[in-house]
Image (cartoon, rainbow, N blue to C red; front, side, top):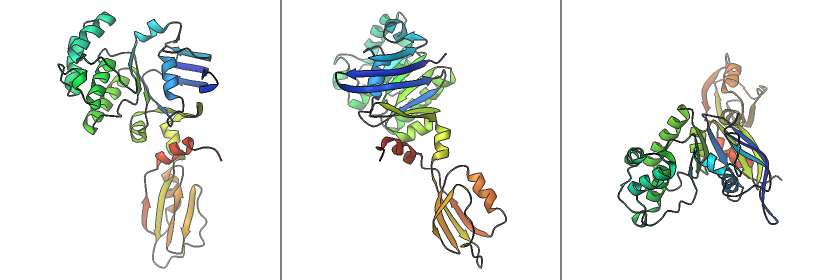
Amino acid sequence: MPVIETQSLTKCYGSRVGVSDLSIEVGEGSIYGFLGPNGSGKTTTIRVLMGLMKGSEGAARIFGRDCWKASAVVKAEIGYMPGDVRLYPWLTCRNAAAIFGGARRRDLRAAFAECAEQLYLDPELPVRKMSRGTRQKLGLVLALAHKPRLLILDEPTASLDPIIQRILYDHLRAAAGEGRTVFLSSHTLSEVEELCERVAILRQGKLVAQDTIENLRRRALRSVTIRWGEGFDAAALQEPRGLTVSEKTSSLWRGTQTGSADELLAWLTGKPVADLIIEKPDLSEVFHGFYREEP
């Protein structure tokens, strides 16, 4: 059973469509990336999953339960941080531990203290004296400390410095390693590539791709430069499958390659190569290709 499942989910705001015919599945113990430009429907989807609004059509389920009808039961197993964290001005990490622990009927004081220490958060500092990045850290403590079965995080690193980002990445990997699930909405492609096993990409409320990072990487282009040995005329050679040569002379080829680099290396075996440069696939170009409008 998927941890998160939507089937033909549609949410309309009057005549405006927030998300349309969305069907995704998120497996247990995974870190799942949810991508798309502003206005693509990511936050609308998250609000439906959290039971904060009801879908207009289709279904949304978490742990097999309807996100709207069983909202209270579902929320008990979730750690959630919205994209725009809004907290009471008087709230501190220490009193939040008592309040949220009471709501969850658990003693969370030690867990909050440990999480705050890891994120370098002063447990006595009230929200009214916090910077945006510090409020973000408190929001993460509220989402992480009780070790929920499912984390739903909407742009969690937007205001964090690089050190805290790294600490958060370690938390998320540890959560997945324990069999818990992370649903991560992000604009930062590098962190999605580093953390996520599978991603869904939205554009204008519609799903345009759902695949593994590995499969997307196979579609990405590598930049290739081949310098041929002295005295060898490579101009007449037929290019191998997957290699597109944009600059081709007897001594130099420049172009792009898709697929496995091993195929190119196998083709070059036995040929007089003086130098070879194969750059890392540019996965960001693949992502941006999905963001762009169809011609």
